[in-house]
Picture (spheres, rainbow over the protein chains, first blue to last red):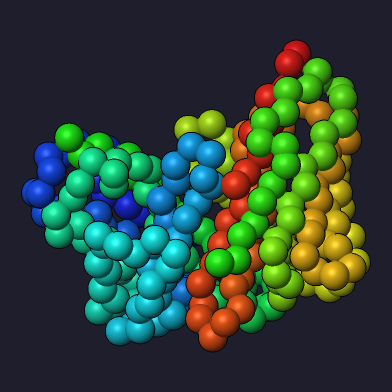
Length: 119
Length: 112
């Protein structure tokens, strides 16, 4: 089954304790993103990746790191989490970046989400 | 920076009534996508519009892309309880990057 998986689904942690949220897709997609969703703010892009070893900042990258060593995986790393990073996080992937007008190839598939609470 | 606003933020309708959400970008978009997120779920792709003035229909849903490619709308005819959720528009940013921006979303509640 074609899907994007994220782990963990729920996480409660304390300020300063490093954590990693994993994201994996099995569709050979090139473009991957991390978003955070907060009430009234919609989804905001944290980082994106065009392909292996190619990553760049989205709109709200402060406090986050990512890596793309393999095409299928795109982990999100919080080196020193703070309470303002409490949020719902989504990983997403698409075959082609949405910028290239390639019809259904631009469709972003989302993971189930990770609800993170930083105390 | 570039912003994409949606109005209204919330909408309650009686089942069978129509519903429209509007999406406005501060800059021109090369294309626009619409997503639906059910309560407790993740966003799911609905459609992509590319051409100026484009109109696409999916059953009771009608999507429009403005002539200037800075605004878009989603209209649902005769809402059903299955239409409940938050609707987002989204589009790529220009400026030499491959960032992607989502609108603020419209949460729809349908009263049976």
